[in-house]
Amino acid sequence: MKITALQEYGVRILLQLAERQSDIPVRTRMIASMEALSVDYVEKILTRLRKEGLVKSVRGLNGGYILSRKPEKIYLSQAFSALTEKPIQLNHIKRDLCGQFPGNQNSCVHLRGCAVRQMWSVVIIQIYNHLNKLTLSDLLGTETVVQQRLLNTFSKNQTPALKVGDEPILAGEVKF
Image (tube, helix red, strand yellow):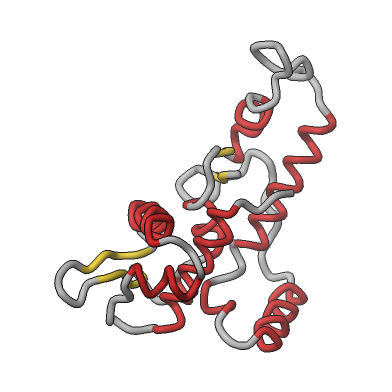
């Protein structure tokens, strides 16, 4: 499974904003410098995050970006969904996943029955079950603190498992 650069850098940018936990905007240049990225690339990511409602832009002399809500209210599933290219809706996995891999045909030759699709369905659902448990605030702190927090979160096993056909996550889209 591949995490894209957009997803990795997008979460890191969100964490830069979450670490400040204030209404004082952070400039794009500062984020670019802190993450060793180009200003244009950071701007592209922030624009995408703004369109998805995760950050707000503040205009003016002291402008920049802030989180649209508190870090504990922004789930990683929302961030990953905002930072991915091809949507896969849980209630349309067959259409969305199989549509990406038709071979040299117009549609996949295994549409009538496919064990691979079932495996990917379970993997996708499990990933989003885990990402639905984590917020930006869970990733704030030292690496050791975050590691312990993650271990505690996943050892509780609080979130009931989703099933294929359940109501889709986040306005109907799981994006990969």
